[in-house]
Image (spheres, rainbow, N blue to C red):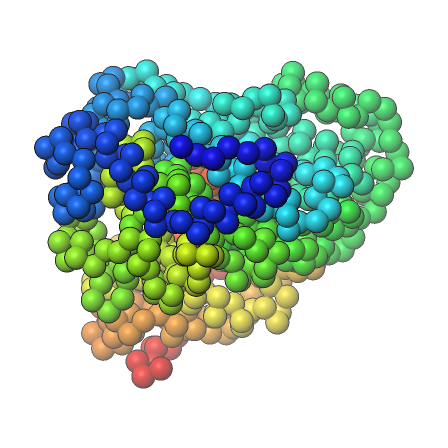
Length: 581
Ligand code: AMP
């Protein structure tokens, strides 16, 4: 049973947080027991446990799985309309579309009513933490951007929607009408317009992921003149036809407000958009968006646009379960740790170290199983991949997220979100991970930063169409000033390519160096807005805008074509990397 409390009651919430983090081991045992007792008779678990619900048997017999391993069960429920009891004894009420890997491939994750309650509990705890540490939040309004895509149904009759849509549609009364508009452009335009009209009341601004917030800033850059004109005339643009948007805006924008339009024009016409968020919404105290893991690449861009307002990275959540809360929401975006909430799911941890290959994709590997630890036995300073067992039918499911234990709150571990486990680039025996690539790109950008550039977004693929194959990185660069984009300095760009190579691991350097198995790394600079077009492409394929994460490895030929058709400069490494450094 989950404790209940009013999320506005900060003291009660804090007490519960202290209680559960002081008895995390015990709670975890209870969670596993409940899941097994309830689900031992499902087809899936029966195959391994013969109907028993013994916890040790579970740890010995139930294999570690990736989504691909259980897809066949989910498809039977989703596509063939077989009963949920294949996987879980609770009825599956919806399937959540997860972006999951940053590879852009969708997963369908079961949701049950009980999972809905767990999520509600998690968000109450999160509200407690925010009320406690983010002072002044309630002195104004929160401008939190939410975009919802339309529901679809599986052939088996289940509703298919994103995690955000599920949360919001199940608690309709709590949210403003405007966010229920399913046309992204109309919805975003209207949300921004409402935010502009109430400019002086906004105390915080946010959305789910940092990449989403940048996308919103870009949208604002493209539409501010039109919005300002709407405010000046008191009339919303004709292309906003959605009744929910029209109603919501008309309640807020009911008359001409020329003074406000003038002041918006003044700010937006400034030569640089540095600090634009703070200038447009001067009372904003915090910006909220997940900024850890692969989102860390956006920190410089967000700091630029927000004028270094505190960035709050609130939680570690996914379609599979809600995992952790940042108990120090005002810490530096580089220092965020999440405290695991012990009653959300049963957690296990695969240590990643010398004897473990984080990229081992053989889920049934007994070798991995031998080293797994539970929540009570994780060690500070050790990296782990998270495994979850949930009440929704996921058993020993590999999240693919790599976490570093940074400390404990009471006896509950706290983690830094490091990266996803996946290899993004591979040629021959080289395996470059998302984190390797991010580190290398960050180092290489030191060459361009003094010239006034920051990297708005990047991606990559292994081009094996010629021999030797080589890695290609797509970079979208942005200038800090509003000056015209200069011609890129060939020598400096080539230096960037070499620095990326120099920062990759020894295996890469050996293959590049000695055997010429990998050719010189290439950076293709794409024109402004290219990554937005890429996002639109993935969204058109069914990815949720709120959950979108730029794929760091592009597999789709169409996606590569989209970026390739926007390349403004190609540069190659001219030096072979030094293996000794
Ligand atoms: P989705 O199911 O589409 O919401 O994606 C969930 C995935 O998003 C997780 O498995 C993580 O890889 C990523 N994610 C969620 N929260 C965070 C966070 N706080 N920091 C970094 N990555 C996150």
